[in-house]
Image (cartoon, rainbow, N blue to C red; front, side):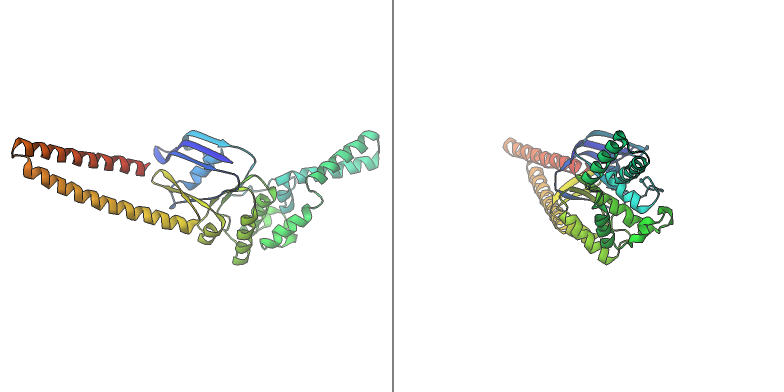
Length: 311
């Protein structure tokens, strides 16, 4: 899970996020939204503890539990013991290395079945079973089918796969890992409509926390229950899906415009009231000063509100 307190992120002196505080709790599905260039990916890199060298940040980010991340740029040869898709996916649970160790221990035991070698093989096989090694093939096949990837492609070198095929393999790995918090950056890129529908259903069923960046409106409407809106250095929190966020933010803008018009009208009225009495009797002059102070208070409050909206 994730707890963020008073986080500021800057690049080249430009503040992308200032004094942001929010949490991502167990089971929450959270979308990070905002225009291109608002700082979503930079914020995400800091949340993951992997900020780019040019970013500066301060504040507190506390991560608890296990995390998995779908990056925009894949690791060229994958993360498995072999540079093939299956090894890359299985590496999410360490099963690629454990499978290799089991095979090596079995061969060593067959060559010379000493008590030590038998014990080593038994321990490794027990660990492989406990991590789901013997049901991994069925689970990987289910994920490949859901995302529209032919299983035989998982035995090909990752370098030989197309961009769309590689994206599916990376997404499979993240889903297979089963971490407590899943971070996805544009997960529907390269997916067709059928694969997208499957992914929507899959994410909805997962018990993990989800942190998502996407321009896919359908995904944002179906897969999240909270929005973090990044704009003008501020991170604002909204409950509900993307459509609910649009409705709430639109209503907030309407209220702000209406309040501004009312304040302008009140300022105009008070100034006219004060000007009409300023050079009259002492009693009327006092009323003018009271009206002036009310104008000052309204203007000061508007300045504070504007500053908060900028941050």
